[in-house]
Every structure is written in structure tokens, then in C-alpha cells.
Amino acid sequence: MPEKQSFLLIATPEVSGYTTVQSTVGGETVTPEDCDRNYVVEYDINHQPSVADQKVAVKYVDQDLENKEITEDILTGMPNSLVDYDPKATIERLESDEGYALVNNGYNPAGEVQFYSNNDDYVPVFVMTMKHTVG
Image (spheres, rainbow, N blue to C red):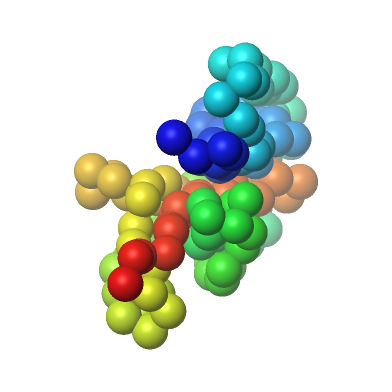
């Protein structure tokens, strides 16, 4: 058992019609002696839906380095529209060129589709967790 390891950094779920200031939870480095973690994400009603272009962030983090960001893709689209993005090319590049392996697909693990928000003050974040391969 390792002396310490990092929890997965998890994107908070987007709830239609609501906003939150927390785009992610988790990601702390812990030891076997640390207590379990519970996270509470608070949401408020979105009283001012936006019609301006929205952003989505897909972050690739290194679990071996305390969830340090490896790279990030920022996408832009109309509010409530489908996000046209496939993480496959970035995952394959990180695997072949930089020696990473995918640990957790926080964008579309079961082929889900994602949508842009309608809140100018919130950028949804999807976290792709990678770790170094042994070799």
C-alpha cells in the first residue's frame, strides 16, 4: 500500500436550471490514516439564463502528481447546445507520446453526450484522470 495517494478529481454534475460555484471536488492527497471524504455541492436556481456563447473545459490531470494538470481543451458553443468533442485523440496522444494510461474518463465514460451551460459565471469542467505507465 502506498504511503500516500491522490483521490480522483471529480467534476460536479451540471443540473439544468441551476448553478454552482464548485466545478470540481476531491483530488486531495491522503494517507492510509486519513478519514473518508464526503463532498456536498450546493446549487442555486439560475435566475438569469444566458444567450451568450458558453465554454466547457476538459482537463487531463496526472493522478501520480497530485492531479496536476497535463493539458486542457477549452470548447465554445451556444447555450444548451451539444458539445461536439471526442477525447479519444487527446487520450491516444498522451498514451503514445507521454506514457500515460487512462484511469477515469470523466467526460463520456459510457458514451454520454454533454451540453453547454447557460450560465456566464460557470464553466463546466470534465476531468480525465491519467497516470504514468510502468515501463
